[in-house]
Image 1 (cartoon, one colour):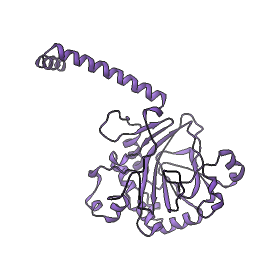
Image 2 (spheres, helix red, strand yellow):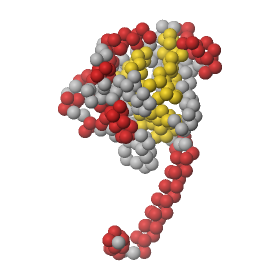
Image 3 (tube, helix red, strand yellow):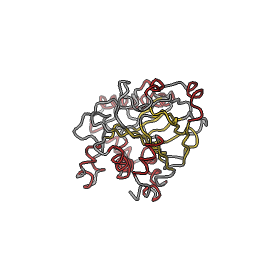
Image 4 (cartoon, helix red, strand yellow):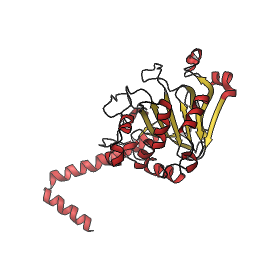
Amino acid sequence: MEEIFNNSFLEYSPEKIINEINQNGFFFFEEAIKKDFVQKIENDLSQKEFGVNDNFATPVWTRKQYYFTHAMTKSKNYFDLITSKKYLSIAKTKFNKDFRLKCHRYYETSHGHHMTWHADNIDNAGKIHENEGLIFITYVNDVFDGEFQLIEGTNLKNNQNERELNYASDKFVEEHFSGRIRSFKGKAGSVVIYDTWHLHRAKPIIDKNFTRKSIFMQIDESMRNSEKILITPEFFSEENYKNEELMKYLGFGEKSDFPSDPSATYKNLPPRKMLNLISKLLTSTIKNTIKMCLLKIFSHDQVLKFISKKKDK
């Protein structure tokens, strides 16, 4: 853990963190994670090529956002953070029993994206559930624009009459809750932890040249279901695979058929990415067509000799 977190955060006990969350709905710690560690995660995951007919987990684009939902297949550093003893100790203190990683993602958000005020106590069918949960937001770069925001005092579990506020409009929130909006600007490595019952959003980005880079993960007390959690086995240490609590946390042997978020297809690719894809496909199609024609005209040995000469030159 010493390689991941700054000592000041390691020394902050899980009990104190959960007490703050229980009292306020959130906990915020600036630069909890070492800057060079989040830099490694950014290097591993930022702006990688999305896959087409690719036989491995790759990132996806959806309009103004870039997502790497299955980042635990790609980055050992990311895997170590998501499965860190510090994060698990916080969850264990909160739930005091079994708990499960429901979803996680590395994501980048650009100017033009709009998130509605909402709580995360909603299942994939859009129904409110009663499960306790924690969300961890980690800033991978300095975030002083488009930061995470939460409305203090809007615990929808306790305030039954406010449940209809889920997905309330910006205008409604501004008129009724403007004095209770808490913004969390912070440097790379800052961490926000909050319970799933509070209304929150990411503030719209003002600077057209800024991209917010973050990590999202949700842990619930319910073991019932989750998004699919894909992992590269070589990231496990001997200590990891002998850890029964970690196996439960990752959902081994449990149902995992919630659809991944976001639901990404070629239809919601940004126009520039779509044009780049079309260009690459056309180039590849022309090259493959030429190769097929040459194979029909010349023998296999002649083609190999031609390739060999070309390499020599």
